[in-house]
Length: 111
Image (cartoon, rainbow, N blue to C red):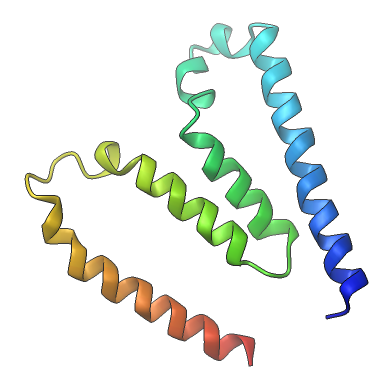
């Protein structure tokens, strides 16, 4: 991939992210989310990593940044997603195996 193509993909992902977050804040300020009763879910800062990660996964050819942002979103939402577990250390090895498998799979697909 040429440097020019990479710059174009980066600008597109950043531009779409700025438009999305601008629309999100505009809808929040106009009370749209309050009417629907979803303001506390949509505007939670922990979700912003998910939003940006999904945008970067869609609009960038290099998926690393998007994957990292989605993983950060998962880390911040860990307690809500896995609150039923009493001991979080039980998840360490399964998650580590999954991450290693994803890295190996992605490295094969890039070739």
